[in-house]
Length: 161
Length: 104
Image (cartoon, chains in turn purple, cyan):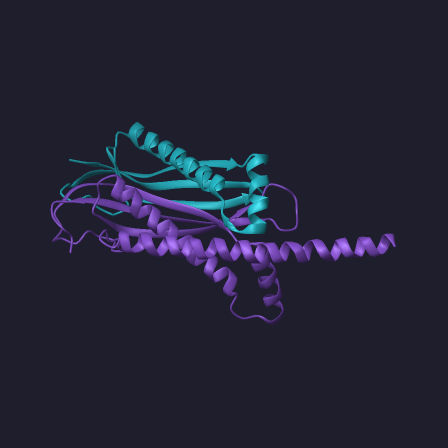
């Protein structure tokens, strides 16, 4: 009897976590994507480019380093899916969307930083990705992924486009 | 101090090079933040505590780099770059580097 209860707990808890994570994770992701899309269209007027040099046609009045970063974590359900995926190999879609969200969010924050400081464009945008580990000693050491976007914000005399 | 990720500063000429300047800091999270991150690992989402911590640390690294540049007599740092690495469990190194120059 005791072992039956134990078995039920051992199986039930992860299943419950999977179900909860599936719904919360999906909701979080959907909301995040909605927010990303809205802000992206709002910031379309502020271009961020990867040019290493400032186009000579642009009259620059001032400049400064701008940055934006974001640490995101994948949910329990998606981690489980990714774990299954490693058996057969192939595209790990659950991590692809996680990185996509993190990257777009970081670029948005970088642009928001530029706008807040009165810049009209960002040049030489760079993107760095790092794995962030947890302090506690458990098997799942990855806490999340940090994406940093940074570049040079420019104050322009007239519109860059 | 003028900071830029580009190789030159528009409208200014570089008079003198002082070489590479660096600034770094190694940080770890406290237990509370780590616990919250554990929860987020189940439900998914942004780890705001980590984002803030890393951003603060990066500013610290940048400040150290600027300090080094100032001590050399530079008034600008060009081609600035950031790098982050996970050193060990729960700790990360934030690193900022660039070339200290004197512009007119």
